[in-house]
Image (cartoon, rainbow, N blue to C red; front, side, top):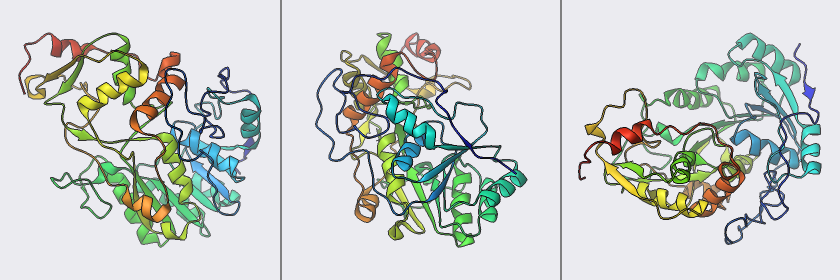
Length: 378
């Protein structure tokens, strides 16, 4: 039988920042970062009130979204278990998090070690423990979800992290939850999971983020720009740079995940979650510079068709317009994104990249190819 383990204060630790900084646990998010500039105060705090106390399982939970979601749920008084392979530290003290807050979180979080692709283990361990609610943060395929549902016949709610990448490319934007989806999308596994949840008749909710950013981001979204800004390099942007996209802060996403917990209005519904505003690629480069306190960046446009980068990506975003409406989440859930774009990028920079921490080393090899060739006017 699987054994749940309560964690001790032993994992990777950072020295807490001054109390004027925003708090990863959310208890002081209203005191926004003051390192480089003063921003407007958020409309609310990172603490969200949910329904009665639940026994909650998070599939994943040690990276990015799960770090913030698990803290919110523990603050709310829920019993939270993280299901992971145990290859990464289950908890870590985060910049801006006080010793007492971290001690409280670490003493309450539980860990179930296993591989979610080991379906028999998933069935036996989850059925032995029993959970009221499952948050599936890292599920990619429907066959990874079915054993969870089989193991928990009395499950009250299954909350799934899908992706706005499931939508079929369209000339009519922003994407709404009722838009056509692309069965050939690289996120087709998430579509198939949503279909499975619907067919099983469980109480489910699916969240479809657009691009997610914020501290601890393991995807090279804002980090890609920060590396170039820090190095004082030009920023190569494909085509005209006027392509419109959308980013949502990870803390706003975590709040949205809590908003659907025990919410009858969220039953069997899909919600797009992202930031309030859309932004062009060029505008995003300038916003990153402003957030990190860098000079106005030099932007170089290029025609992607003139280059062969092999398997390397020269730019971290889809070279197209890509953004979604968040009106349904605002109307049905009463959710509002707290961060505007520059404010959110500053939160990411000051609590992560600006402290010398990042997920991937800088790689300017594709930049050098672009900048070394005569550029094509677009």
